[in-house]
Image 1 (spheres, rainbow, N blue to C red):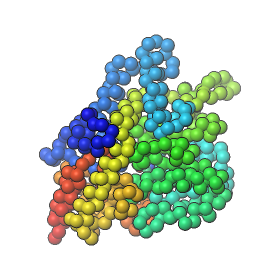
Image 2: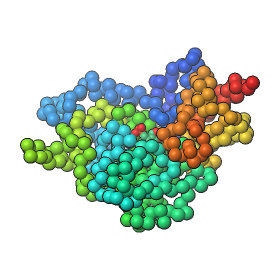
Image 3: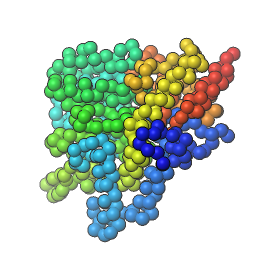
Image 4: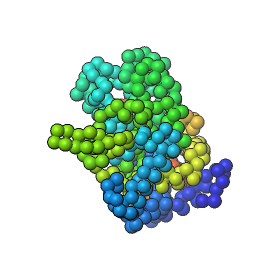
Amino acid sequence: MALTTTDPLDAALVKADFPLLARTVHGKPIVYLDSAATSQKPTVVLDAMQHYYETINANVHRGVYAIAEEATNALEAARGTTRRFVNARSDAEIVFTKNATEALNLVVQSWGRTNLSEGDVVVLSHMEHHANIVPWQMLQAEKGIEIRWIPLDPEGRLDLTDLDRLLDGAKVLAVTAMSNVLGTFNPVRRLTDAARTAGAISVIDGCQSVPHSATDVQELGADFLAFSAHKLCGPTGIGVLYGREELLDAMPPFLGGGEMIRDVTLDGFTTNDLPWKFEAGTPPIAEAIGLGAAIDYLSSLGMDRVRAHEKAITTYAFDTLTDRFGDDLRIHGPQNADERGGVLSFAFKDLHPHDISQVLDQHAVCVRAGHHCAKPLMKILGVGATARASVYVYNDTSDIDALADALDATGDFFAF
Ligand SMILES: Cc1ncc(COP(=O)(O)O)c(C=O)c1O
């Protein structure tokens, strides 16, 4: 990429880095607008993973032969890249998991089961993904903890009017940094400050924010932050849990088996150092290498430019869809691109989201339809499902135009 750091992103150049985006669907060029579910992967990520399998495939932290050491070095280099990407203080604070869901479950099962008992309070919000609800509900069933909920204002922001009261006596505040349905960016620093003042730890779901904006865990003041590689140009099969070292250090292991042990006897075991204490079994080696390559790729674009690009496309989408469809199309969440990321959940006429999605597919436009793993939020919005278009570094205004044209055709198709 021959871009300087101050140029806006050239989405056409970026698109050329993603082989899948060259394909056609139903005879038409694909328009991929489902990056909130998973992003496409650039060639550099695919090459890095293939290079591992072709040249240094060996298990890590065990062999003393050359390729085993190279594989170990590559895995640990990816951890360092991830640490710098979120500005953690040390590699010990970066735990590789299967995905963000497992990272959140790790916090609940390890920190939560150790530190919470009957009546202890965990504060969540109405816009959480199931991955940040169900693990806490499982603990509620086991231990009888109390869950309190931060409500939303009419525009789909967190309503923080009663935050101090909700946090009074709480042990945990667990919230998303950005809603995967409403697009809302939450004021994470304000939330982590309030949690700390109340004596609670903060758990931040960074699944939707980390791929789309610069992240500094120290500036955010987060105790834990979870995210998945597959939403940030990386492979499936690997997620990240950032945790403050003092907290991780005091926590018991989550899963047992190789890699997480220091010693095992017939009488018991002792645990490995951080972060391996939380990485039982053979880790996702190729996936970690792919994650490192994905982060290098995004860093070469510049996360501030990624955010600026998505903000511009989101603004264009709001203007285009409003101009063309007026009251027939309603986008959920804040109406101002400053307050939100490029996730556009919408209602169109009185059509069912699955019908919309199916007709859009005939025009090669890929959007998600459903509850987006946020059923409590769907209920609060008073809908069973939404259609959702979401943008990333490789989308440009032509993709939004294609969405609008396909929506026009959808309206015609169902006009009878
Ligand atoms: C906000 C949010 N949290 C958590 C998750 C779960 O991510 P994963 O399925 O990669 O574990 C998602 C995925 O859609 C998400 O959008």
